[in-house]
Length: 261
Ligand code: NI
Image (cartoon, rainbow, N blue to C red):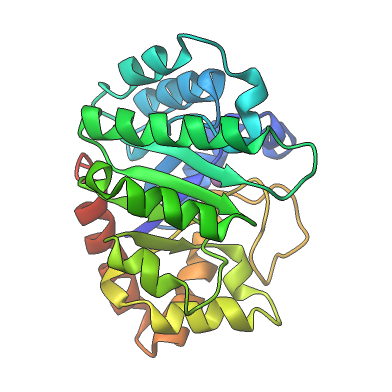
């Protein structure tokens, strides 16, 4: 069974290719048995919950992405906490820090909401799905300072920092997921991270609708059925068969997202 541990199916991108239900059906035909649809604000988290409840094998996480905090309003985290009670909510996410664009929400606000959502996850008894872009040092500092809030685990999704830096995140007990970028030419840094990180900490994802893997790189939208190309690449980087990598990722996903059925 293949697993897409992180994707976005709540936008209208899939209308061009027959709608989201068709995308999910194609994923099932391709052997993808578990899809975790990630929220990035309150509205998308509510939509992700509905989608998960309507489709077998689809789960979701609820939370505020650091780039979406301009949408954040007082009381929204209470609503996120309610979503966490769903049988199909496997994590709080995606949460973290994103300093990539100059007009991203101010750093103090990002840090405040990151910590609040780490606390929310711990109180809900759930792992976290982490988004971190151009903010490695601050992300690590906040996680290390709040280590006790990570007792239900976490996933560094689309890991793209240095291979050496993965050691520090690994020491916090975190898992790592890789998507389309690991199939790209010149992704040497990502390949080295995959090789360095212990096999029991690695998951596969698409982060669709963007980042379509090779050999379909450049086509839009990406979708969960494409995760097979990611798993093939991870297997070759780890020097194991695709079947063995699939089984390993399944076990890892069950260990991290313990609400998966
Ligand atoms: Ni994402």
